[in-house]
Length: 401
View 1: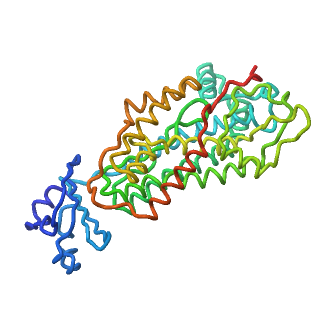
View 2: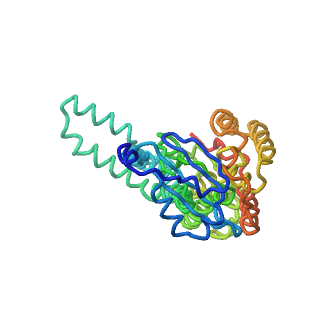
View 3: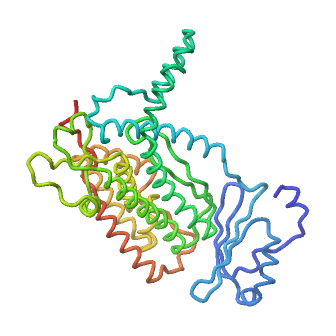
């Protein structure tokens, strides 16, 4: 819709159907939310015709016997998805995640210990070696052995990358689909690449319009962790079936040991059985796919913390309203306290203060109650959150080096 199109429209009092409403200013427009007058609610066809003439989008909801309207208007063109940015980040993330998977395969895979592998050419090392040979005029070496070595090394990271991207995108698409279901404007997932450890810092989507009420807040906040948890359990089961209990001498060269939650230990027992009782074979050597599942469970745990803009903050606010801030303060204090066990918790605490916040912002319409079914689901999610708790996620291995 252009400004010219808006000027050519006949005047329409698109706020007339509201019995009462709240207005929320957006960049490039305004969103209105409120109850619909009974006379408009009785004549749905006339109501839709009036709203179709409004300069924007609308959504009608029947909640507890009352009709609610969310009307989003725009000044000028509606904001578009930046597909180029999503695709660029995804392509870069695929490279860094595959590279991380190759490293993990070398260190934790079936052919560990790490120092037995002589082919170690990381993506950034390959780029430097490629440029060096181009500048030296030795381009024949690129096709002769540089590219084959790099391709062979990277191929080992593909199973890990597929598993991890499946988990991350399942989580974010859960949010995205729930947002679309509730008429909330949301972006596609942004996958954040990282040139170290797991190859990514996770994925996010951005809400470009406010969430109307606590039911939609709950559904959007819970859909991601539920989808991500299901995907993580599937990946864990597959990865653990490819893992094994090995003698401790086989753990040499592994830089980190992964802390396990109650849920992860239960999955390991279910898939792999109890560890052998013979001396020296109690160490669990995780396949990279199992590490992807571990990372998925850990990211789900982090997102379910009851803080500000995290999924857990959404869920707790939907459950208890503005009293969420008390749970948030307790969670923040726990983060600071756990910083004595693992410094990463202090980093997360700093991010909470700078970006994520402790208190959750209010929804537009506080009058809509959550309902018994969603409350029960919320309690189950809190229990699952506790089962995924990992006090010390990573420990420097005594077998390293």
